[in-house]
Image (cartoon, rainbow, N blue to C red; front, side, top):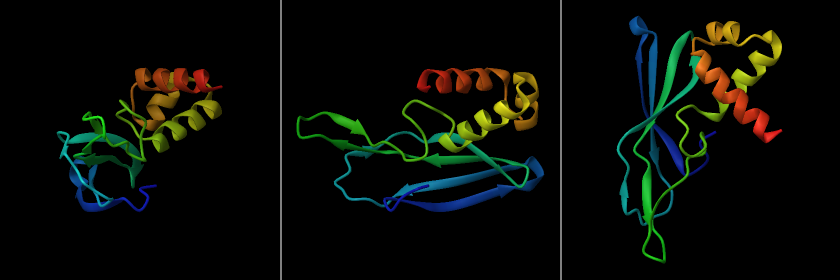
Length: 124
């Protein structure tokens, strides 16, 4: 999922809060201009714990002098949930065919279900 340019830097598990945070670091080629503020993406649950990927995404200066944020391999631009979670949402929704039930099973909001359904429909 991460590819060779990214690596897990640390994993923090708070089992009492049912939350796992996985910090990701960039290990790819440079030069790096700077990093974004910390960003987080909701990922697939791990052992009934909400799991989040956290990363300060690197930015590079292009040959035209424009600073660009590097794309991350686990999520599309401007998304706050991973592609893997999106895939699971679409699969569960196709099985249960009820947005409210899918949201309850995945412990996410119906708004997230609707968002992913819209993205999947647009791709189809």
